[in-house]
Length: 430
Ligand SMILES: Cc1cc2nc3c(=O)[nH]c(=O)nc-3n(C[C@H](O)[C@H](O)[C@H](O)COP(=O)(O)OP(=O)(O)OC[C@H]3O[C@@H](n4cnc5c(N)ncnc54)[C@H](O)[C@@H]3O)c2cc1C
Image (cartoon, rainbow, N blue to C red; front, side):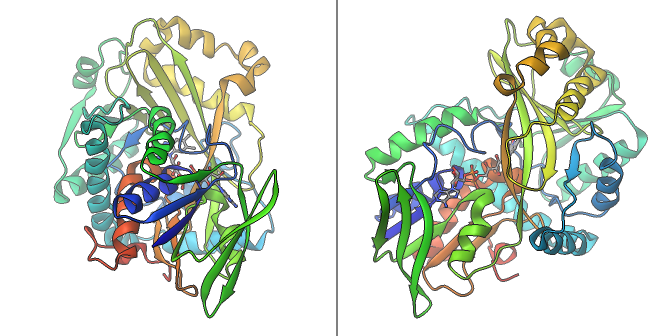
């Protein structure tokens, strides 16, 4: 059985992994060279704590408020694009308590399942990507965020997750070098983190060893369909127009580009790119023990042995390579407000030197486009109008967390097997 996968991000490569494991003859078509995409420079979190989808009550009003602040972590580029308007309406309609209630358990199940599969990759000894499962702390400075996060902690316990609520002193004991200036925090003990760049660098070589054919610099440009079935996938390379015929399965895992590719097959996906930034620096001595999210600022930090990554922002809009300096500035200013000890790190001080940062913005700031579905839930399943097309995208802030699990579900559904976790909430027809 032949499978063609469109996109070599974490979702496409994980799908290739599990399909190849089940004996499929797999080809991955990737328009880039696999040296970078959204799956590389992200924060590396595997986050069962993130069981609340992005579309949730209160997010719209907060978003509107933030749109008037150039340093804010959330921004929707105003546009009359019908795609954005359709996405926006669906997003607003999905931002309800009922949606959050219905989504939390299926999301948690997939998050835990996927984390375990990722841990197995590391345990197998075939890959090494700094898998660490010491948890992640959500820090808050205000009463409002404390209330919200304690409520999340309560729901997490209901879902079977382990949490510990920390007061200011306990947060300071946990991160003595950071001297957190916070009201407190919640430690989500089931969270883990990895070095995503390492995983993404190793996966292609291992897939090729397993017999997966990866064609780099190959952009899918169209499909030939007959009787609701894709007969041929057309793609463009430096050598000109090429095609693959006779795929039993085509997996669309093109991240933020998925709506355009879906349209070529006559399918529609409500999804927008959500640009985010990260900055990574080498540190002489790791002063931060655990990954942490600064809630009011929506800034995340990930410590590895000798590196620290800081990331944030969600700019919903077009795919472009503009870096908005005030937002980067907003991220860097937030860090010492919460974690004053960070200023003791000479590498952070150097990064936060705004004059130098502005001069070297492109070298210092990475950006990627999260594929943000209109209801904050991934699409995993067969396309409504095309028999042999499976859609696996829309993972928004959770692509790495859900990557391995999504790949496994794709393989299970392709084989017509019962899935390891429920997939009803991820159906493409919703
Ligand atoms: C700042 C930031 C921090 C994040 N932190 C985390 C985190 O800590 N944990 C987490 O779980 N998630 C995180 N995310 C989200 C996560 O990175 C994404 O959800 C995930 O990378 C999406 O993976 P993907 O495979 O769907 O898309 P991508 O990684 O974007 O891959 C899609 C691929 O498809 C290719 N493609 C597109 N069109 C075509 C075409 N026509 N033909 C062939 N190839 C095509 C693209 O070139 C690309 O390589 C973060 C994101 C950002 C921006």
